[in-house]
Image 1 (tube, rainbow, N blue to C red):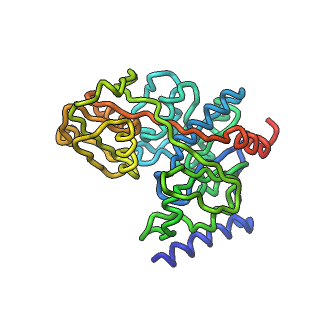
Image 2: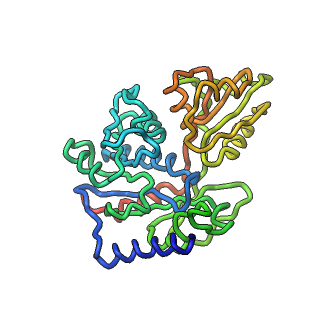
Image 3: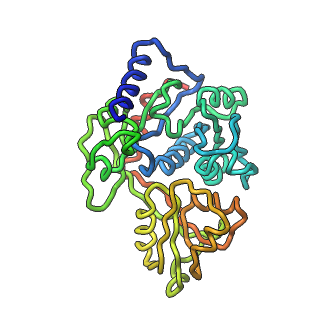
Length: 315
């Protein structure tokens, strides 16, 4: 089964590289942020950080996203007004979260990112595209490919789908222009054939809805941490790094669609979760929880931006 999956990957790559199938170009530059595995490598925080940096430099970025596990099929433009007046189920939890965090950066959701980009161009939404989770989206031409890497996964091997979690073998990294490697305690940085940058996770704070909660007010309380993300154990460790010792940690599967029963069964005097989970909980009408907001810090961000801008066509 793995051999068949590997054959299909190579066949698709040959069809595009030989010109039998062609990638379609949008009228504005496209920067892809993707990975080689099934999530948990920090793509979404990096997309947010890049959108903020580009915005600060005078660009008008637009995020193109597939909208994983959304309920709608049509192309949806997430309104930039706050609060976001669209159901998260129609666009997906990550696009909804990005729109909510960024405020004035449009997010366009569609399985065909080329068609989503055309919608953005027709509506004059911006002048540069960030393609969320786009490394395997061959249909759309990219001016720059960034791949995010978890060094622990990288060191562990490359078991391909459907048995493992790898979408492509490690050798596919050579198609990318840049790599952003998560800083994980105890994990060494991999040796890569392309320029790489260390990405550090930074805690922006603990929130209840949009109100910042001082961590010291949580001391001595019966706190339960829960998360429906790809690597919940990382979230639990981050909570403990704040000096919070949960009485219980409850993992759910990635993108778990919570029910009221789930929330009630978690228990605890105070519940804390991730910002992505908060999107799904608020959509359910649940507000009795806290969430952790994180961002990324790249120590050499200016050099990263310099390389990115040098590869883009003139706007």
